Length: 124
Image 1 (cartoon, rainbow, N blue to C red):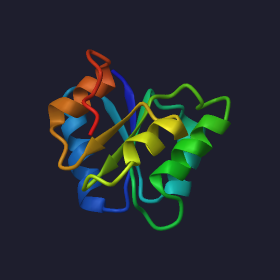
Image 2 (image 1 turned 90 degrees about the vertical axis):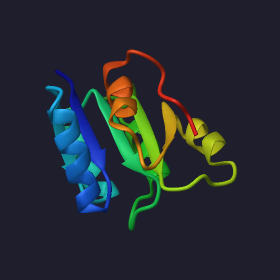
Image 3 (image 1 turned 60 degrees about the vertical axis):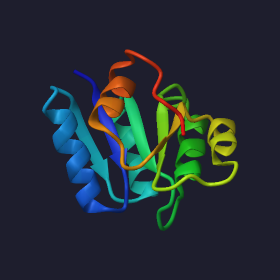
Image 4 (image 1 turned 120 degrees about the vertical axis):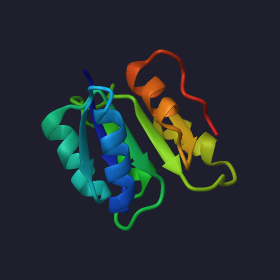
């Protein structure tokens, strides 16, 4: 079982991710904004983080940078999620220290692969 943190400002999306990964025995934590997600990650030390690219307050990239700057969360694989491809975002995501960039809608198997580390998650 892995502890997974989802950070997204869309509550329905959070609940969908949470239910999906819990069906496969993982613990799912959720946060509805970037700062709450950073705080929760620092408190709970998840095994993997998925963060939405665009949110009010801290963006997904800002969350990644904040997690990389804290020694407790610096090595936690963090994936940035986006509803649409954006120019040069993959480069920005990698430069910020994210493990990958995933386009929504995301298949449950893609999430599970990233969580379980069975293969590199598809980028873009």
